[in-house]
Length: 199
Ligand code: ADP
Ligand code: TYD
Image 1 (tube, rainbow, N blue to C red):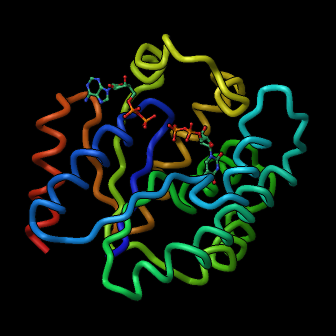
Image 2: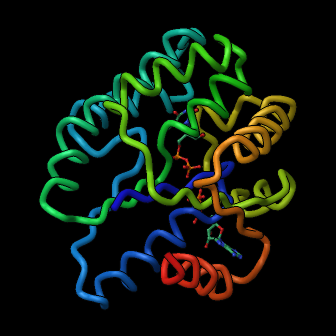
Image 3: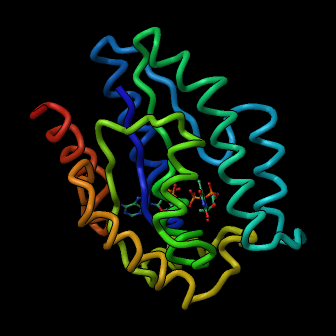
């Protein structure tokens, strides 16, 4: 089973992924968590280029680098894990590329981005996509203590386009389960478990 978590930076993905992994392991499942970009030595190197606030990355190379990191992770880790029955939980997948590079940067059309996404992910489609919906203000408050990476320095208008982008993507893909990210950590975790049980 392949599950991804989506939402703007600070929406609570990592927190929920950690709890879900624990819960699934208690049920006797094998679980692997990967964050994007990252998860393999090459993808981690690409991550440091992409998130370094000193990198001067053009919009099109940004898109291609996120996709390259994904292609590496999919081939090297995700496909082998799924093949041996491991549940894979992803902290972001290609929906992030659609939202950030497609809607946020408007670097190519959404159809063109979809072609690239399919290529980089070898056609994998997650069974569940949990979207943690949260306002930009709350996300910013939660991230106040952290240093900003290059993506987070992109500004308020950029994040508004990303948020609107996610809303469009959600409407088009029934695999999305939208959760209120402003709720308490425990009540969001409960809702996630409820959705998984009901399938
Ligand atoms: P993400 O992985 O989406 O960037 P995190 O899970 O790292 O987000 O959460 C960002 C910050 O917000 C962390 O300090 C975390 O403890 C806190 N946080 C996460 N979920 C909630 C929540 N539901 N309510 C309050 N704070 C939260
Ligand atoms: P990360 O520190 O993992 O942020 P978060 O905790 O919010 O997931 O940084 C990943 C950043 O890269 C985040 O700002 C979203 C962005 N991103 C894209 O722009 N496109 C992508 O395809 C992916 C996977 C991430």
